[in-house]
Length: 290
Image 1 (spheres, one colour):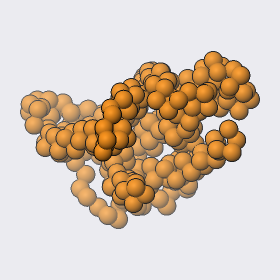
Image 2 (tube, one colour):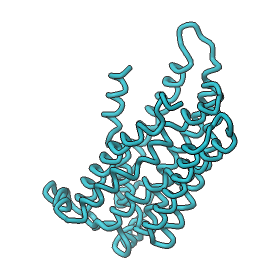
Image 3 (cartoon, one colour):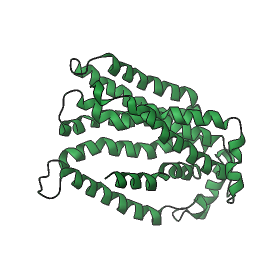
C-alpha cells in the first residue's frame, strides 16, 4: 500500500502546477484568481461529497471486497474516464480551441494583449524558464509558498481526525466533514472573486489565513469532548480560510510574470515547495495529544 501511495504521489505531482499554468494561457490577470478557485474548489467540493460517498460505500457488505476497496475502485474509475476525455477535449491554447470561431479567437488574442499574465504565442525556451529564479524577489516567494500551506494541509489531512475527536464513529466522521468543506468551497469562491474584482491579493490572503488561525486557536484552547458544538464550529472557521491562499498566491506570482516559460518552471517549483510545507502541519494533531 505504501508503494502505491508513493506511485500515486509521483504521477500526480505535476497536476496542480500544470493546471494553474494552463489557466494562465486563457484568462487575464483580473480573472485568474477566481478561475483557479473554481478548479481548486472542484477538488474541495469532491472532498466534501466524498464524505457522503464514503458513508454510503462503507455500508456495502462483501466478503472479499472491503468498503475502502470499493471506494478506491469507484473514485479511480471516475478519474481514468475523466482523464481520457480531457486529453482529447481540452485545447492547447485559445488559438487551437476547436469550439471557438475565428472571431472569438481574435477576441481572445486581443484580451491577452490588453491584460494578460504573459506574452502571446511565446516559443519554448529552456534557458528562459529559469532566468526568473535569479531575481531577488524569487526567494520571498519560496518562503511564502513553503509556509502558507500549513493551514490548507492541516485542514485537508486532519479534518476527519479533528471531527473524530468529538467522539463520532469512522462512518459518522466522514458524514460530519461534509458541511465544513462545503462552507470552505463557498468562501473560496467569494474571497477569490473579491480579490479579482478589486485586483488585490495581499489582504485577501491575510484575511483568509486569520480566519483559519482563529479556528486553530479555538481547537487548541478547548476540550472538544466537553464542548463539541464549539469545536465543530471551529472546523468551519478552519475550512473557511484554509483553501484561499493556494489559489491567490499562485495567481499573484503568475500575474507578475510575463514569460510563459518562466511561469511554467516557477509554478512547478512553488507548488512543490507548498507540498513540502505540508510537512509542517504533520505535528499539529498528534495521536498522543488526543
